[in-house]
Image 1 (spheres, rainbow, N blue to C red):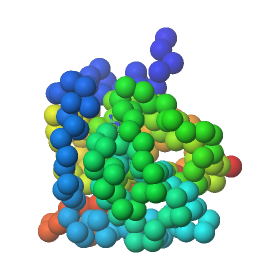
Image 2 (tube, rainbow, N blue to C red):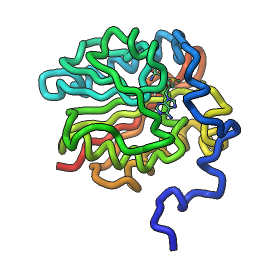
Image 3 (cartoon, rainbow, N blue to C red):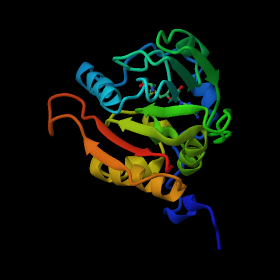
Image 4 (tube, protein in one colour):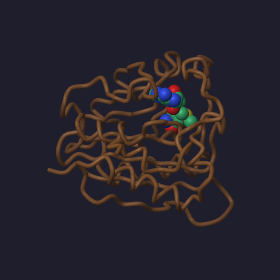
Length: 213
Ligand SMILES: C[S@@+](CC[C@H](N)C(=O)[O-])C[C@H]1O[C@@H](n2cnc3c(N)ncnc32)[C@H](O)[C@@H]1O
């Protein structure tokens, strides 16, 4: 019997319409915003509320980053990990950046307890081995540190896992919560819709958990 938690999901759940290498897709610069201004502001307020980048959590990893990281308060250290070098170089809040394809290698290129927090904005739906990545985040974020996923309802659909596209927005909160549970190493996750329900505007959901101390 398989011990891989991804095998608990239906066949094809983590497959994508476009299975070509991600570096071919992300080689093109996309200096765009993937959510509207209200959702971006909501992300920034959540980070402030959780104290990310503040005195208790100064070292932050921005996973699946691009040219903006949405902080209202500049973290002392912000490492941006992503797939497009020019976008990462243009990120004014990042203090350093790393190119790394998480779908080729879900192991994060960082030492244990390297960070006080990690964020991942509007990107978890692109991961084909999300539980491995979430598990490794519990290694590179120190005990008591915080890991936060935010997401909306827009995406590059050919690059998103089929399972994500097949479920409702509320079920996506449950799915990310399940990722934390299956990864292990975290306290109970919190999952909320942070924007007012319904249109207008992009919804902004957040699921976060602290690494178990
Ligand atoms: C929708 S954009 C979101 C960018 C940014 N987090 C934001 O809030 O605007 C998706 C990001 O995921 C990154 N990404 C996609 N596939 C990836 C992979 N296999 N490994 C690492 N990063 C990836 C891309 O570089 C891109 O910046």
